[in-house]
Amino acid sequence: MITRQDIVAAIRSLGVQPGDLLIAHSSYRSFNPGDASDRVEGGPAAVAEALIDAVSPGGSVFVPTYNYGNDVWDPATSPSYDGVITEHFRKLPGAVRSLHPTHALAGVGPDAASILANHDKVQHVGEGSPLWKLWQRDAWVLLIGVSHEANSVAHVAEELLAMPYLDRRRTAHVARPGGAAEEVILRRPGCSDSWAAVLDPRLRAAGAVREAMVGQSRFLLMRSTAVVAATIELLKNDPAALLCHRCDCDACNSARALLRRSGG
Image (cartoon, rainbow, N blue to C red):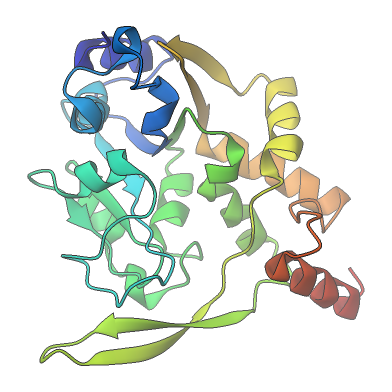
């Protein structure tokens, strides 16, 4: 059985220290919880708590708690669609959640409130967003049993380069006092289905990825600045580098059309 302390030890062995900033993307299924020998004692809540332990004292941890527009957005009650670890994390004592209607993050620690502030007033990964602030401060990125399809900080590179396909729009609904739901128009995020194939080799070639196994779950750790730098290189060489090749992917098909229109 895997303990909370085992998870903390693994994260610390990769280089995370007390006082650090960390954003974690995770899959609880990667621990193979159906196998008793690989089960996490305390379940997904223990993993969420281990993330905080790994940077304590003095550090702050963040996780995505995106609802992707699936529900009328209420930061107190809208569930996270990014896995059970993130759903437990957002409910922890002291957790703060940003107010972006589709791509909110949750955080715990002394920097959580300032990092998450005003997310509803900016693009979900644009300048002033939590991911932008974490990139500016060179936060660690931890992938627990997931690959770069989940590595949201790479979107910062698209913002820095002002990629022509960014200005796509969607609607979402936000709960207002009295039970009303207000429709808001937001930038539509892109697809990340192809990111592992293009990002992982470049990051590994740069020596930017640290790796450990916890039971059957693979932990990958890297600096957010390394992720953004690698993504910028990819996009400068090929503006369509992050777009998938599924014929039914509306996001990537529309992005390619916008690139063609811009001459990219």
